[in-house]
Image (cartoon, rainbow, N blue to C red):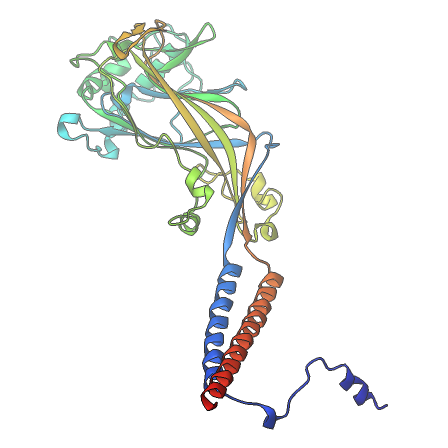
Length: 442
């Protein structure tokens, strides 16, 4: 038998001759309808193939020796900037006192004047012109019995009011308004401070800390260590001509741990049908307001930080090491950039928070119906954030909802299934029409 005849016997798609085919109007309608259905279902398969899902995974965080950035924006309408100090400390023993690098203090007008921000150029309590009045080449300022600060303008001397304050803090001495201190009187320290007594302050910026449990706090006065105890010079805070004194009423405009998600990501995942990422990745302390008329008042926030990674599509093809080229891993990273990888992934953090507040004068909560709750006396007025790092890590990974093979399989199923159903419908209409015609003829 010729090869062609052998293949003919294997043909599963037997054809009919053109003369044996019958075309009907109902068949044309069914064909048009089936084509429309096929186009709609194929488009739906394509949309499903292009859809990106975010799959959360929970793993043990095995990272070691990492850093973490904290972004804060907090307003204190009843404490001037000169009195506020930002300190950071953690369980590893590292301390950052009087943090200024990466953090701005924005002076705010008194509440009676609307609390507007004052010009940045007015932020420096000790302007360069005022400091330079007594700095001739031969000048060596007195440190008044305290050791000169390391890194001063001149070894063995205290050239500015700030250097005298630093020298006093190094030996745990209270400073006050700098009365009888030549440098402070020439700079007008006390006068300038009293002029700002009715102002407020906004602290904003980024601080980088070790990724271990620790705390940061904003409290009045320069901080120092006394007998291994962290204390603040509170003289200028409590000794004030302001009626009612300064208080730590505050508004937390924004507080986050790690970088903000890129806008493209939030647009992709936000809106209707939001994914678990957008539902949960919020900063719970944002827009928090606290008010008090008691100067001796303490606010504490206890924060549980959970490491969170966002891995976009194709990140593994661009990744080098930890998602960053080897040369960049060795270079220092500027504040505000930590956590953004060159492969598009983002290493950030989510957190939950609880809060507690108390008067430093002690007492109970009888006014709130809790006589059994007693508060200890003593402490430092201010706002304290104690953070702990969770041992777990959340990974939000972008994946395609369907593979290319799945998409092609779906298209074939759509076409085959639709045509099969259309053929059955067409056959039913044709047979039904024939039976109706026969009944009419009889």
